Length: 211
Image 1 (cartoon, rainbow, N blue to C red):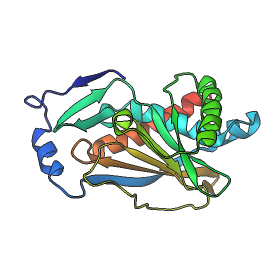
Image 2 (cartoon, rainbow, N blue to C red; image 1 turned 45 degrees about the vertical axis):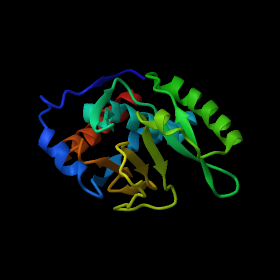
Image 3 (tube, helix red, strand yellow; image 1 turned 90 degrees about the vertical axis):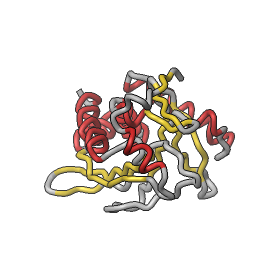
């Protein structure tokens, strides 16, 4: 994946980057309910895979926010042109494996490629990933058995800088279907304004997907 190196000398968040990089736990995140009423109707009407449909909208939203495409590398910052997804896939024994999804702009092409990638991942049944090959990825997972209002994520030490997106169990409220969506980021790169931009972009991506 192509990337550019951020010039720290002119980087407007230089002091914030240095400050939060010194933290043992530099992460910031939130959970918000996203309106998926129209998306779920499309999924059911067309018999589409729900997780992949939600993953498409979330990955497109994350890629639209430059800060969510930035990563810490060797003490500096790089910004990728686009980011792929590494997501969990449930296995029959109750565990899961990891699956990489390419960044495909067309909604239906993404779902078709996603189905194939998931089947291949199930056959390999592995959670092993090369750290160098995961740097640009967005980590996506799902807890489809539970509607939650907050989520504590496991994170490595030393800290990484991959955004983590998690879906909960969708539920109905006041005539809408809502999906809990969590986003966890490294605060050295991402502020609240960027997190808010992700949720705003996800609303737009859902509207675009159901057109």
